[in-house]
Amino acid sequence: MIRRTRIAQQSEKRKVEQREWQRVAEAALRRDSHTCQAANLVPDLACKGRLDPHHIATKRRAPELRLSLSNLVTLCRAHHDWTHAHPYEAERLGLLDEGH
Image (cartoon, rainbow, N blue to C red; front, side, top):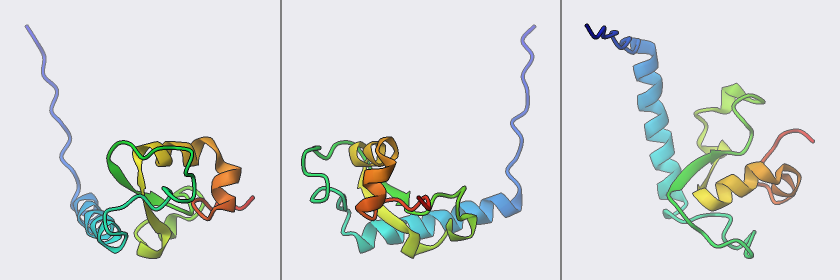
Protein backbone atom coordinates (compact mmCIF):
# COMPACT_ATOMS: atom_id res chain seq x y z
CA MET A 1 0.00 0.00 0.00
CA ILE A 2 1.36 3.43 -0.98
CA ARG A 3 0.95 6.11 1.62
CA ARG A 4 0.35 9.56 0.37
CA THR A 5 1.16 12.56 2.44
CA ARG A 6 -0.91 15.67 2.20
CA ILE A 7 0.77 18.76 0.93
CA ALA A 8 0.51 21.47 3.53
CA GLN A 9 -1.65 24.32 2.41
CA GLN A 10 -0.07 27.72 2.13
CA SER A 11 -1.10 30.17 4.82
CA GLU A 12 -3.03 33.27 3.86
CA LYS A 13 -0.09 35.39 5.01
CA ARG A 14 2.27 33.50 2.71
CA LYS A 15 -0.18 33.81 -0.20
CA VAL A 16 -0.29 37.59 0.28
CA GLU A 17 3.51 37.74 0.45
CA GLN A 18 3.79 35.69 -2.76
CA ARG A 19 1.34 37.98 -4.58
CA GLU A 20 3.26 41.05 -3.39
CA TRP A 21 6.58 39.50 -4.48
CA GLN A 22 5.14 38.78 -7.95
CA ARG A 23 3.95 42.39 -8.24
CA VAL A 24 7.35 43.83 -7.24
CA ALA A 25 9.33 41.34 -9.37
CA GLU A 26 7.24 42.17 -12.45
CA ALA A 27 7.70 45.90 -11.77
CA ALA A 28 11.49 45.42 -11.66
CA LEU A 29 11.44 43.57 -14.98
CA ARG A 30 9.34 46.34 -16.57
CA ARG A 31 11.53 49.10 -15.10
CA ASP A 32 14.65 47.40 -16.49
CA SER A 33 13.00 46.84 -19.90
CA HIS A 34 13.33 43.05 -19.51
CA THR A 35 17.10 43.47 -19.99
CA CYS A 36 20.03 42.16 -17.95
CA GLN A 37 21.47 45.17 -16.13
CA ALA A 38 24.92 43.57 -15.80
CA ALA A 39 25.51 42.97 -19.51
CA ASN A 40 27.62 46.13 -19.86
CA LEU A 41 29.11 45.90 -16.37
CA VAL A 42 30.52 42.39 -16.91
CA PRO A 43 31.00 42.31 -20.69
CA ASP A 44 33.31 39.26 -20.66
CA LEU A 45 30.34 37.11 -19.65
CA ALA A 46 27.61 36.56 -22.23
CA CYS A 47 24.02 36.85 -21.07
CA LYS A 48 22.30 33.50 -20.84
CA GLY A 49 19.18 32.05 -19.28
CA ARG A 50 16.04 33.51 -17.83
CA LEU A 51 15.86 36.96 -16.28
CA ASP A 52 15.71 37.15 -12.49
CA PRO A 53 14.89 40.01 -10.15
CA HIS A 54 18.02 40.05 -7.95
CA HIS A 55 18.20 41.49 -4.42
CA ILE A 56 21.10 43.93 -4.17
CA ALA A 57 21.04 43.88 -0.37
CA THR A 58 20.51 40.21 0.38
CA LYS A 59 17.36 39.03 2.13
CA ARG A 60 19.51 37.84 5.02
CA ARG A 61 21.28 41.18 5.40
CA ALA A 62 18.21 43.39 4.91
CA PRO A 63 14.96 41.41 5.20
CA GLU A 64 12.95 44.63 5.38
CA LEU A 65 14.00 45.37 1.76
CA ARG A 66 12.77 42.04 0.41
CA LEU A 67 9.79 43.66 -1.34
CA SER A 68 11.46 46.98 -2.16
CA LEU A 69 11.66 47.76 -5.87
CA SER A 70 14.71 49.96 -5.26
CA ASN A 71 16.56 46.89 -3.91
CA LEU A 72 16.00 44.85 -7.07
CA VAL A 73 17.93 44.69 -10.33
CA THR A 74 17.18 42.47 -13.31
CA LEU A 75 19.93 39.98 -14.15
CA CYS A 76 20.12 37.07 -16.55
CA ARG A 77 20.85 33.70 -14.93
CA ALA A 78 24.54 33.83 -16.00
CA HIS A 79 25.13 37.26 -14.45
CA HIS A 80 23.04 36.36 -11.39
CA ASP A 81 25.25 33.31 -10.78
CA TRP A 82 28.37 35.42 -11.43
CA THR A 83 27.23 38.01 -8.90
CA HIS A 84 27.01 35.43 -6.12
CA ALA A 85 30.27 33.76 -7.17
CA HIS A 86 32.18 37.10 -7.17
CA PRO A 87 30.69 39.10 -4.28
CA TYR A 88 33.50 41.64 -3.88
CA GLU A 89 33.55 42.54 -7.57
CA ALA A 90 29.73 42.53 -7.71
CA GLU A 91 29.62 44.88 -4.72
CA ARG A 92 32.11 47.22 -6.44
CA LEU A 93 29.81 47.29 -9.48
CA GLY A 94 26.70 47.98 -7.38
CA LEU A 95 25.10 44.60 -8.02
CA LEU A 96 25.42 43.43 -4.43
CA ASP A 97 25.51 45.04 -1.00
CA GLU A 98 26.77 42.68 1.66
CA GLY A 99 28.33 45.38 3.83
CA HIS A 100 31.97 44.54 3.02
